[in-house]
Length: 119
Image 1 (cartoon, rainbow, N blue to C red):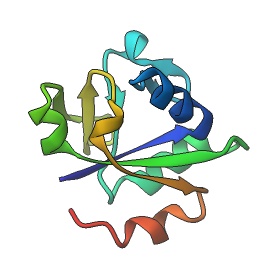
Image 2: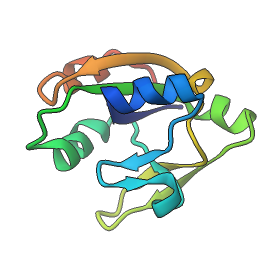
Image 3: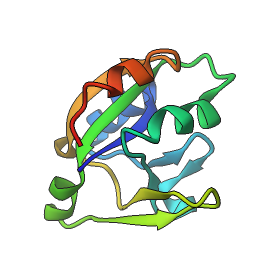
């Protein structure tokens, strides 16, 4: 299944140079949170608005396949959030090799872009 993570473009550029991405969410690292927050294509627009509204930083959407991440030895668990939905959590850094596509996005574009992604 396709899973998505919205990242600051600068954080992703640094991660590519370093060989791994360790940002869990807007305000937390992988070390602080224990996992990296991700979303399905049906969840990502609402998640992005909740997390990134009010930010003017350039964003990118990291497009991954949860099977590929798991096959590389990193756990992806779908866990229930307070809203009752199950979200994919990545229990380790995101390696550039996990990312099929990096799409520059704004909050207004996410729904249009994700409409073309397959589950």
